Image 1: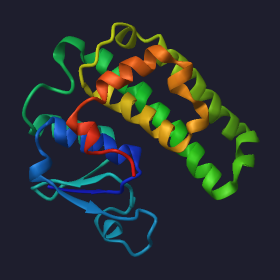
Image 2 (image 1 turned 180 degrees about the vertical axis):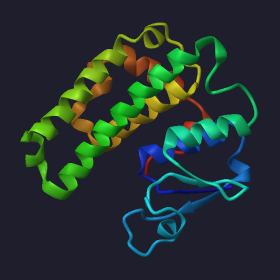
Image 3 (image 1 turned 135 degrees about the horizontal axis):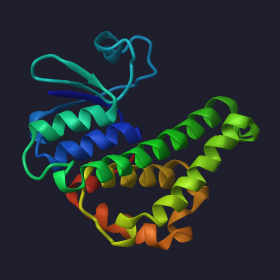
Length: 200
């Protein structure tokens, strides 16, 4: 398999963590690329030019981090990232994590292209409020309150989103503002799959 990615994409990091968790990293070639480049190899593989993109051994081209994670879960070894006993709950948590990533990523991209004044627009303000609401929701989430650090797809997606906010939007200062969430996050990321995929 081949995984097209860069070192700062939260979406690509979800896929990489899943590769480690499912013991597929040794079977996968990591193809580092710039998804913004107009002449990249990635653009020749998918018209979307998005990362992560996974090319399977059969030549199928998969995009979208959660879809790639589902594929890897079915191909790899070990415990499922979507345990039967908590299937819907895991998907719900993954949805919160993915939405948090979307909001944070779009804040970062918006500021990159239009400066911090984009935060004062209706859309910019909506994204910032979505981040705040989701952080508060996660701090009170049953899995977080229970200290359940099992690395399901839900936990992985949320943990990567929180890492990304610390990396790109440190002013949110979520670890100090949400200590319960911070304690849970510290347990989830204390493993090789997160250590080997840290943002650079």
